[in-house]
Image 1 (cartoon, rainbow, N blue to C red):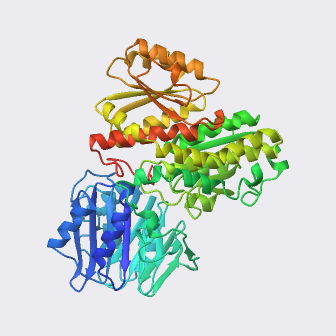
Image 2 (tube, rainbow, N blue to C red; image 1 turned 90 degrees about the vertical axis):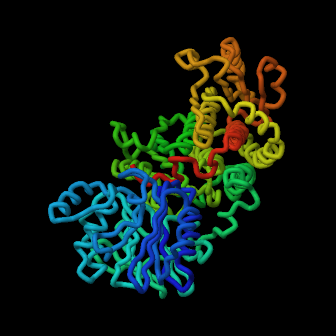
Amino acid sequence: MCGIVGYVGPRDVSKVVLSGLARLEYRGYDSAGMAISGEDGIKRSREVGKVADLARMLETSPLVGKLGIGHTRWATHGGVSVENAHPHCDSSCSVVLVHNGIIENYVDIKEELLSNGGVFSSQTDTEVAAHLLGKIYSGDPKEALVELYHRITGAFALAVMFADDKDHIYCIRKGSPLIVALGDGETLCASDVPAVLEYTRKIVYMGEGEMACLSREGASFWDSQGRTIEKEVVEVDWDLSMVEKGGYPHFMLKEINEQGAVMRQTLTGRTEGNVVDLSNELSWTSDWARSIKKVHLVACGTSYYAASVAERVMGLFTDLDVRVDIASEYRYRSIPIGEDTLAIFVSQSGETLDTLAAERFAKEKGARCLAITNNGLSSIAREVDDVLLLKAGPEIGVAATKTFTGQMAVLYLMALYLAKLRESLAKDEETRLVKEMTCLPYKIEGLLENSGPIKSMAEKYSLARDFLFLGRGFSFPIALEGALKLKEISYIHAEAYAAGEMKHGPIALLDRAVPVVVVMPDDELWEKTLSNVQETKARKSPVIAVTTVGRESSLKDVEDILTVPSTEPELSPFLTVIPLQMFAYYVALARGTEIDQPRNLAKSVTVE
């Protein structure tokens, strides 16, 4: 969601903060702002729109000082306006702060402050925190921040400056992610690593209930009771080139084209000799694997569709009771969970609040928890019993592409490994699937090299107002993901259904103006899906078929065909999703929408 950047050091503060905010634009936002502490106190600059709009404002009215904080806001409390943009301050501007998250008890606090003469200029929960901190503060920042932490409830990350302290930035973290970065004579804080990679790779991940004081000399940390704590400094293995476009017009296109490499990296060290071996990462034993009875796969958005593919894999190779659930619903349902449950939480960032809450719910019930994430130092990775990493590198485009492939690959390996420990996976089946998985990176790259026809096809359909996506079996989650990609970045209404469900409602929508995308690789359900194609054609809807090379001759009546290389039926999702990603990309390009930063969306949803 919102992006936070703070800087203390010798560089031009406004340029550092602007650069960091620009690298956090993928998180999604609608306004941007900055505050810098200088000789004349703390000055603010805020603007609705992009970081570039804020930068233009600063060219006219520059802010100068030793330290500063910046913010990109995604509106929750209060509309999109300059008054609601961060940073916020108390009435005397003695305290200025930026905030990611939601303060749940802000209404009660605001009423209390209003009754004591408080005057507010925005509709945000953040301004309430600034006024409360200003009231609490009596010269000791640490003491004030500890009290603030215990007065406000919800999930929040705060970066704070005090007007009478011109050398330090202070941070609080509860629920929402926040890191501290240590450079040479300079220190930064940020919502995510890409914001600081230009300056350092030495990172401290702040934990729940932790606070920090940043200066040029480094950072000190304490817990929610004010007790000093020592924190581990981690040197991340990302570099600046990973968060730059590298010659591509959009991050999304770059990341689509990285999927072969992501698949290869995911398999390396886990599939030697055509066998699956995760023993270096998981401490699972055969006895434990045979003791579990239930597997819960829990995720949001694209991660949920990856989990839905995994559900089908596990159904093939185990006799476990497997269910997939949306994270925001999981903990509100009466579901049997206990020591016989393996709960798997899929989150690209590892900071998705709904997924974190679901994990904590399952852990309290006694389930063994596994995280599938791209960030081994994320909140969810630190809380679960086991972690499997995607090895995808940073994904900047809001619409997930390469991490979807990484998630599917890790989930496939995990499912096969679990089946192997339970002795329900035959050796020849393991060899067949692993051998083909090692070929998939080359097939993905070959498919991407020959994606030219998709652009003209996308331009042909770019004016459509509605799309229907269909698929069966392993292809149903891919239809869901294809529809999601199209609506995310092109703003075209798109729905996905299991193809067999078309007659139970969606068929009423079909006419010449509603294109239908049918995911139909060469598998045991191909003929049944073909019958759905015929039903669609009878209603005059144009059809785009995604199918396996060699099946074109059976689709003579179909307007457009996108072919993928042949593979084992269970592995078709790795290939059929590629043309759907490219199709969505080129439709959005033709429509002129913002591809990397779609309106109203955020890369990591850190509020409920």
